[in-house]
Length: 106
Image (cartoon, rainbow, N blue to C red):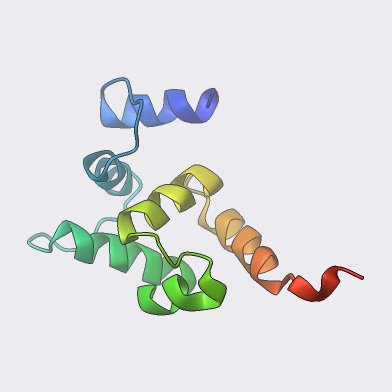
């Protein structure tokens, strides 16, 4: 992962080999994507995704089957890795990917 791995490690405060839920929540806190205290981790991750895309986690998971078998935690991990917390970059990439049609084969 290089620079991104080093950055995540510095945020979490330990060497990170797997992006688990705790790791992601620490990253969200550090980057001020963390929601109000007292929410469950699932709610926090859902709020992060909804803030990023402005539509619900349910819609993301079911959109073209892209995240059909993914949990909210896995989706957040994917976005963290993809965008290096640069939400606009992640959104642009996802929007581009979703706009591609399966009918491009001739």
